[in-house]
Length: 94
Image (cartoon, helix red, strand yellow):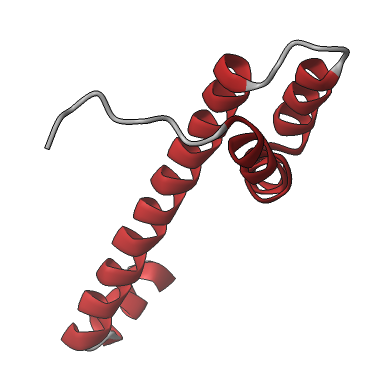
């Protein structure tokens, strides 16, 4: 028997369920952060004006700082751009 099998046998059933829940939540958090990163990258590519070097600089910030760069872009640049251009109107009529 290995140490790991001894520990698995000594672990109460509730602890195994708790470990499974924590693992699922960690995987979900990783997948959500990857989706957020890709969303900010695509948003910058599609919507950032090409005047000067702003688009290139923001792309480099997002690419090199990854999750942190996506958060910086989301909170620093995206609201200012949306406020300056106005929100996109929905094409659906109510």
